Image (cartoon, rainbow, N blue to C red):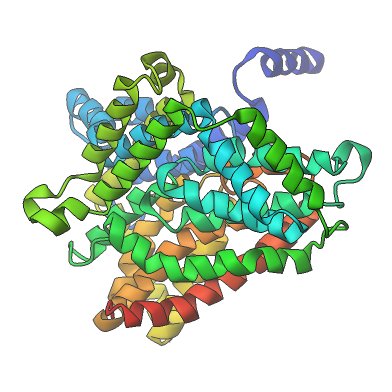
Length: 501
């Protein structure tokens, strides 16, 4: 009997499209949550939705199946269980409601636009230009990668596509040119340093623009909700608030990593020649690259509301409408084609999993779960007798360092951020709401430094073998703490100077 059970488990482990042991753990979590008594203050249906949501987060963390499949599972369970409605028709409508959200379509369309960077080669050209200018020393190459990230960040809402798909191949090519190869045991020559710079430049720039990583528009929505719309982070406001602390972090980061993980090779004159040779092979700017540059300029101008500044509020355009304009411009000029749009799997994958997570977060808020959790968290902090400054610091720290438990920034933000923001605005005096909110905004991307699974870029760079696990976590923790301190001190002063508090 034992051998038969073992054979059956082995068979399923080989043929089913999910990892069997994590799937069993996830199922047990769901059953355990459903068997628990319903907490005071929640209805049975509300607790059922909490169980579904937490189980989905566990499934994503354990990587039972691809995140899109996990999201679809959540949609199916919400639809069948009717935890959000009294009828099947209402439950399905609730489960699919978020797919009409302009927030989600902004992310999807911007990912489609960023495909043009790879197809035209403009992303590679930008990276090589900065290497040719700054690459005489290893630290100069690091700054070249960082500046490349900064230039691309406003237009690539997939930080994975930017850091893993555009910048990382450039980084690997440079490391290989210096015979820095994990397979040969020479990764510390230059590759380890550049890989860490590649990762940390990606996380810093992800926090500098609304359109630099997928969850940022969701953060904007949460901030607007907890302030009842009195503080709205437009594209321009976000960039203005984050530009100084972000640039300081980006300026200090290559130096800090040179201390934390020093390269063995410090002078790299060959990198300049390598970049120049590659640029020579690419030739002059192609017509499609020029169209990409023009499209980016148009998007930046419209996202920054420059027409409205010149001609009045009638010319204010919704960011999602602007994104569609940019996508249409690329298609109609032949820079990308419809097959490119259809084959951009990351965009449609994001539509499914992001839509499902947003849906559950909205429903949790709608049926009072977020308010219930916020009240419990607030009561715990008040019972501890903390002052508001300590409470605010604790909320930021808990939110950021709980990312050790998450393999998705979006899942983490969807699960926790609204509740933490809600508690914060209740405990912090109104005149200090904005610095607290902006610290939470900064923390939502700073936390991506912590682990090798913290965001989509992490496993790509870690998987290349240039950085050991221990070194990754050590450097990630130090950089996370350092960047939080920069935002807390310099950021707060900058926001004060801007008149936000």
